[in-house]
Image (cartoon, rainbow, N blue to C red; front, side, top):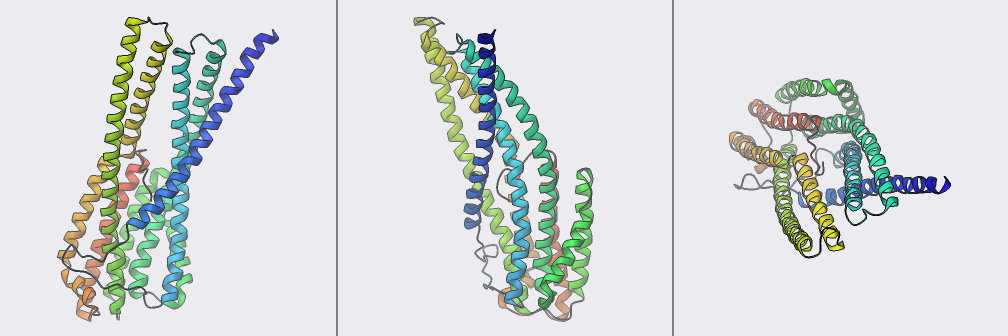
Length: 390
């Protein structure tokens, strides 16, 4: 009785420990890799000041008040970091679930091939399956909770960034930056408070309200400093085009790497299939060579399936199309609002008769960014997760 108990309890404990270990290591590794990827993307996506290939904007480092501008940057950046933290946890739980399932698949493949004669390993593999499925259920539930908070925080961050780069830079009071930020922060929190099912509707309603407010305030502005206009153009249209361009290049590079990876898996699987056939004919189905070849074939097919699932989950084909469309829209924006762009490029302040055109230019661009935010929320809410950096 005690011997039978040991044959059940010990491998069961090992199976649970393996599942928990793989789950934790995969999650921690995901966060470290995403952190490194975020720093690399941020370094590569610095704007150059190019305006649709037809000239450059002057480089402006400060607004009406350099210290206020720096303070506002850190306030918005803190919100951005919180959104990134929530995203990292959301993705880490998904990666943990996938890695744990793959570990269970490897265990099952081993139990069905060269470990088929081990009773201990069969119990170990069976317990690993059970614990893996349990951890997957927990991980997906936790990921879903983080996803809702992440989407809401990301939307709030985008509205704060929009406010900071439009109203504050162009017409805000640099002497009361913290108070203005806190006021708008509370306003955004209240507007985006609805639960997950109503979040997109809340974001759309708040975005429409913000466009009306931005248009009205710019059109009725008394004066706008010339460096403020140049700073807005550098930080919004130019920087956003640079970000979209870098993201398209990153996605294209990832696609090329995936093609190489999938071709490599195909050749390895083909080699394993040939070895399996040869060993079956020459050595029989009980030989160690046959079992190892079957195991290798299962692993390569499993890796190909996992890679395809991750690729489809990232929705990169759709993202690439959307980002290219945004680049074209921004190029069209530069052409449509050439007068405002020329004022900013020349460092001239908009006159009273230019305020209407300025309001139209700014709100047209911000509506483009709002539309991208709407698409992102709809896709992320439907579980087609964008796994790239925020």
